[in-house]
Amino acid sequence: MKQQAPILILIAATALPLPAQERGERRPPMVPLPPRHRLEADRPPPTSEQAAAPAGSIEFPAEFRRIDGYGNHLDFPDVGTPGHPMRRLLPNDYADGLGEPSGGDRPSARAISNAVASQEVTVENARGATDFLWQWGQFVDHDLDETPVADPAEPLDIGVPAGDPWFDPDGSGRIVIAMNRSHGEPVDGVRQQINEITAFIDASNVYGSDEERAYALRRLDGSGGLKTTDSVHGPLLPYNDGGFANAPGSSADWFLAGDVRANEQAGLTAMHTLFVREHNHWVRVMGRANPELSEDDLYQFARMIVGAEMQHITYTEFLPLLLGPEAIRPYRGFRDEVDPTIANEFATGAYRLGHSLLPEIVRRVGPDGETIDAGDLPLAEAFFDPSLIEDHGIDSILRGLASQRCSELDGMLVDGVRNFLFGPPGAGGFDLAALNIQRGRDHGLPSYNATRRGLGLPPARGWRDVNPDPEVRARLASVYRSVEEIDLWVGGLCEPHVPGAMVGPVFHRILVDQFTRLRDGDRFWYEQALPPEVLEMVRRQRLSDVIRRNTRIGDELQDDVFLIEVPGAAAPRRRVPGRRR
Image (cartoon, rainbow, N blue to C red):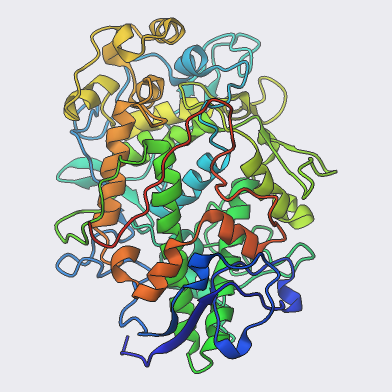
């Protein structure tokens, strides 16, 4: 993009009246506006830090990242773009070394789920992490990777043990949980899975990973904004009127977003809605301050800020809680030799840890802190139902995510996703734990012990080396014949946590590797690419700020939505990133 004239930006605590079609959104502190538009704020007075925020002009960026990620690395412009294979940190464990699923000599994935992942009573995490831990994790995951399934189908069904009380109550021994293999392409003769979206933290889940979808999401009315659907609860996502690829179907009954999975569950849809509103917040702010900017300029500038906010929230709120405050080393700038490509062990193994954090109930909370009249949502009823958002909006769900401790991160999953039935027992359904295990075998992921060896960790010689807890050891030993059989996802979840973190050593190393490469291998990383005044503003943002300015939620929401106070729990430290260290 050609160099633009300086644009006017004022960072202060202000508020503006909202257009009727945007009711339900609320202005926060620290929105940039020209001095002539400054009005009385409806938020608390600015802090001394906010009052000292810079005002003046900034240079319009000469370049924005492309929707498809092309050209992020100048010498290798395809790095991180859609349609390329995921990388492997370690050699594959295919049965034939080429593409046949692994684990054929191991117990059924459903048998392992019943033995290890069964959870009769929900155990809340001891750190005080809220449901925003898993919800933000899922939102970011859908910005990083999506693996298509094989077409035509390549069934890799999961055998159900005879007499399984949920799936085979009649004891027929013929029941399976259906699963289709992921699409694979040969690379040097070896089957490799494909990432269909950009690998970067670039808000592709908001904007899309290809120009056609990105164009369809835009208003194209001169504002630079994204399409929304008017609602008494505030603007919602647009519907899929164009028949774009979407889950669970391409009809106009479903919402449309940058990622095909936006309708998957109500909390995720709420997050997509929130960040579409956030984009439209920034185009209004910039348009009022700089009426000479073109529609494309406004769109790209707002997109740049939203992507930067997602990066900042991930690395200053989410990851310090999950991995510990010192897990990711300080930023030293873009490194062209760093490959940000998503690792199979990350996408198909370690980062599926969030399934352990899920609750049985998704809370819906009103401004008074009480459950709304419509009630909380059983997790099993929160999937693929746009009416939950159409009828009640997103505010109650966002308050609920911040009000409840998520489940402990361990080897167990709640029944809502482990014994999800399509009808009465025996009518079919799915088991998320079994599917995760089987998907790892489909992708030829190395076993737990092979991963430990490959990461430079000592292998487990006995059950106690996996976890000294007698109950965990007994669960593993009841289904696996040897520690060498343990699947990566199972073993990684069962490990004791690294001090200061919520994951064990294997997942910790995989996650630190991936999130370090995502940052250091991104030429448009916010700490490097943003103009200084904009960077200063973004560094002051928290997820709670994004929520308050785009909903009717106010001070009933805590500033750190990822944590609620637990007596006796140590408060995790936060690292404030710097441009260079």
